[in-house]
Length: 70
Image 1 (cartoon, rainbow, N blue to C red):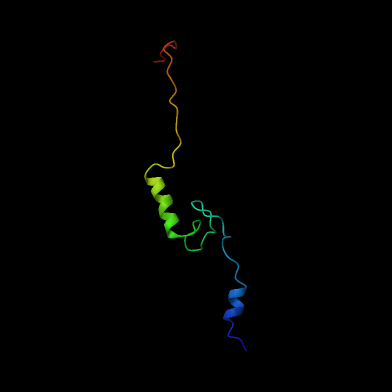
Image 2 (spheres, rainbow, N blue to C red; image 1 turned 90 degrees about the horizontal axis):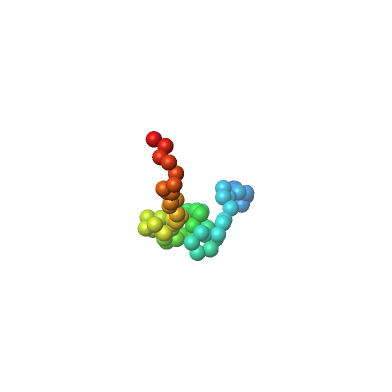
């Protein structure tokens, strides 16, 4: 008679499906989701902290033809 461990682990549905790692494209790991490893997680964090992910903004020019609304 089986001990039941094999049967139980074969019927477990993963909570999240594996997705490509946003840094390198490898399949994600359960421990580091959505990344494939702690290395890719740390690379992504470094990009956030050093300003690697930013949206460039263009400042609107103020026209001197418009009257002040004070």
